Amino acid sequence: MQDPQPDFRPVIGQPETLEPGLRRIVAPNPSPMTFRGTNTYMLGETDVAVIDPGPLDDTHLETLIKAALPGRITHIFVTHAHLDHSPLARPLAQATGAQIYAFGSAQAGRSTIMQRLSAQGLVGGGEGVDTEFTPDVLMHDGMRVDGPDWSLQALHTPGHMANHLSFAWGDVLFSGDLVMSWATSLVSPPDGDLTAFMASCRRLLETPWRVFHAGHGAPVDDPQTRVQALLTHRMGREDSILNALNAGPATAQTLAEAIYTDTPPALMRAATRNVLAHLIDLVERNKVKATTEVSEIAQFERV
Image (cartoon, rainbow, N blue to C red; front, side):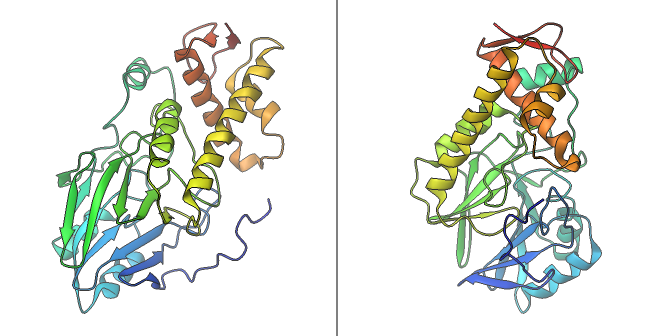
């Protein structure tokens, strides 16, 4: 697989100043799904806010605590409850006395259809979900939290995960895993919701952001172009799925194998989950129907 960002080579565990008042430290968890590793961000100099502390890793915990000196970590913000973003929040809170701010638990914010599918056990998912995550402070859409030299406003941006928040810092957005520059976002039901993903992306187009700092990879320097490209990509995937279904009923896996022809085997599971997300969205819009109850192994056909 070709490296999508060969020039993005941060030193793992090394604080890097992105602009005055903002630093990034990449966690030691590279993988096909996390790229170089999780981007942890630190805002402020005295009372420091940490955004996405990352995976459960003692070395990364020590790095964050030391990087805050001579200041102190007073706030911990989590974009969403995946194992590469949220588990270190509690140990960091215990070590520093800071409170954890997030939308809610891993199940918070699910749409009615996703709640129903989950309750019926009709879809799998659960990729890397931090089921034990619990914030100290629940953040709602539009809620603002201020420090001495920083201010963050929460935007509820479900899609990649139902409890996903993005954080606005002036004209800068910490976009978590909703919008990244190195890859498209995984949308895996019932945690991921394509209908919500498209709505969140369209919402982001309403603001003239200067830059996105994502959960993985390099900054998104042209947010409007990138978000529009993601919407166009998803609409193209929808067309490919509908065209493939012209040949007859098919499962999400069969469709993924026909559409994602250049995808490495290690990522085909994620590709299948993305296709399933599209199929559920198409079912809700009455363009596709399942020949049995909706599930990853169900057959789908055009209406």
